[in-house]
Image (cartoon, rainbow, N blue to C red):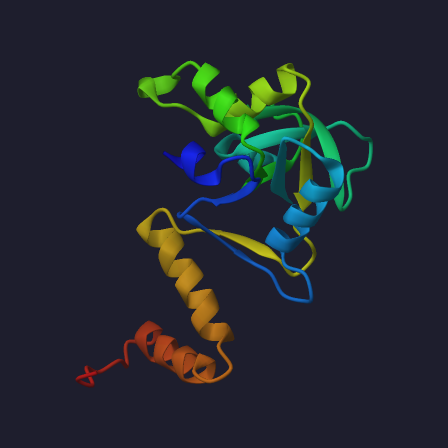
Length: 188
């Protein structure tokens, strides 16, 4: 269905359990699109730096260049590598731009654990086929939020609420009263 919709055009994919904040003149998706169009890659992926101990929780890439900054090619992608076996400390940030070639890779991908198809495996096929795969790093001040569990959603909500110029101070005061046990039901 998606292949028929996009036709021969490149398209953006963003996972719904992730928010990526971007401030400034060009957000991460704009930079992904720009690099994708300029490079002609089959896939362009947003990545962010994670602590080595957390790398096993994400899809992790291996840059094809020594000091990856900005946008760069990759030569490997691994879904949730075993602890200590990650090819780098750069994890997929759940934002992508693909050409329709990804549909060929998805069709050729064998189901993995629990019979699921992993997008990472399809991207790895693109690499094996010699199709270009590139990454764009999140910049300083940009952040990836996982909102796939109640706790990670609450943390993201609190960060956004506290940063809100209109309501942030009042929300901080509300949290303070909750933490000190002073909160009273107000009938909101």
